[in-house]
Length: 222
Ligand SMILES: [Fe+2]
Image (cartoon, rainbow, N blue to C red; front, top):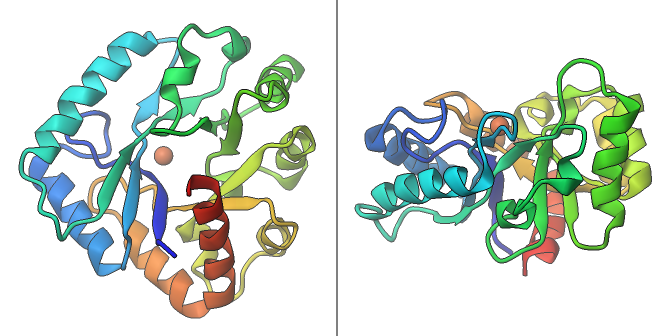
């Protein structure tokens, strides 16, 4: 079973997650020290600011810059995106190109404030289309009432390690795991933040929950 970090901002200068190759290699080294085998590089995608083609071109340049010097001992990188949902996203041209590499998975971030009915319908339409597997990014940031609206459509959940690293895990998050809706764990690392410290704490303190999520991620990807 591979340890997979499903959500990380590690591509040099692609978004505010890394200010250059040096930071990116430090992030990859921290991931390796946390026994991460595979990292999904998921830079932010904001559909209102940029079209998919230009985002992909930018991501490619950043990815190649990183791969030029990447050592084999560091985790393998898969490219994806953290997509901010908006009303009508189901009609975004080339949306399929934002899926995680070689999958039909969209990592979808919701706004922090109000979720309009139309927005939920748009994300729900993607879930129900049969074309995509929608994974809700850092579901720990939203109220369980909101998250459950998307679970009803068949969305899956990604949790940030930070939300699970405490000795006592919040009941709502434990429920998501026990309902078998959590298919991904993320460091959501930005710069040299604490993402992998939280990752290690969660793995050590709650090995059963950690393994359950990793088994689901492996079943989703392989
Ligand atoms: Fe993120």
